[in-house]
Length: 260
Length: 183
Image (cartoon, each protein chain N blue to C red):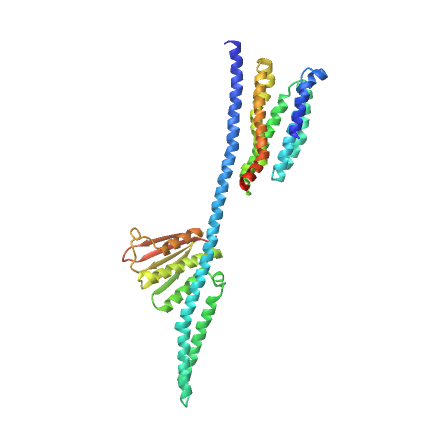
């Protein structure tokens, strides 16, 4: 091999080595840039999700508030108002008659007592910290009791595990989802019975709402705004919601919500 | 500071042989390299996030002159090309850059690297040190066996230009971003 070729070989070898190192070093630097860009995008996504979660939380709070006000309005009109009106009529009768009937007086006393008890329930439901202070089982039981009072459907609650605490914000959204499910059953399912089961697993709480209503074909029927809303809310809170239904055989809604 | 020292080194290297009647200008470059590696270390010390890594760099800054003195006066002599010191210095610099990148990689605070001066300066030093290492490290061997020193010096010049261009970008990138945002 001529001497010049040998020199060129060494020179080219060194230059090629330098070029390879240059490429490798540049790839490292540009990879870092790319990775950082991805991290920024990820952060942006998380911020957007947190914002959506906060908005959803606020919306849920407002909806629960509205729901409570409607409920109070109905309660005052249908129960407290009726009972107090009856008590007033009874008092008028007593007033007009010369002799007070002790049995009627007892009835008046019972009616006023019932009205007072109802008012206490209403005052309790108005408390802003109710959802925070009560456990999910107690909230579900209260809601079931309220619906049972309406005598439209029979709601049975089976809380089969020791209750575990849950993040307040998630509890609020979960309760709102639960309320929406029950509202959907009352409005659309034509059901006579609803069975609610709560199951506290190590990582998440599972609520199963089963009704004996008319059901629907999940493949054919386009899920309405209500069902889509339930699913979006569950996903935003980090949970999942599954709906199983067969026409004529009722519907099962399963909500799975992690504690943290 | 580094740019000023670099300029001074080049001027001294150009005239020292004729003015001081030296055999070569290696002593100027070798002295400059000590200064350069210490400056790199101090720079990384200022941009590191963890106090522990800052302390390590301080120790390194203290050890470098000892290595330099030993290899210059005991191994190669003041007139020789101190390739050991360059290899050690470049390796340390690359490791310091890699650690800085690791800190960025694992930091919870996100920095926009496109407009980060520190990142681009570290990137320039990283690229230059990686590529310079095989040339300056083998310079003694190559100069003694093959007459390719001039061509390799051109390659080094090109790498230097690339590093300085990255430094220019590093100083301009925040201004460029501000201009883009305001327009």
